[in-house]
Length: 115
Image (cartoon, rainbow, N blue to C red; front, side, top):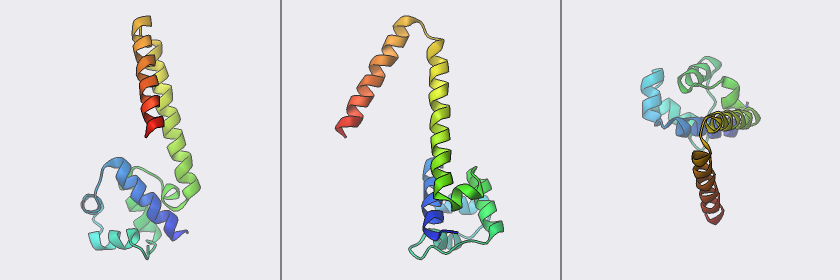
């Protein structure tokens, strides 16, 4: 297992769910200090049962936490699912509302390019 990948993916999962280490500690029953060790510069690796408990609490797989490639694949899958949902909603709108969404998306794209 890659320590740096685990630390990065754990931090990413916490951030994307809006959780703090303390909140994860309460949810999992794992001491905050122990979780800090997994996120620290030395990035120790948890035993498999602890990794499974962390993954379950964050709604991800252990593979997500230990594999950078898997993490990127899951993020890509989430993005594709979100795009699909947007397209479904868009198909149900009338033409005027479709044009409003198109204008909004162009504005967001322009802002992102400037950032």
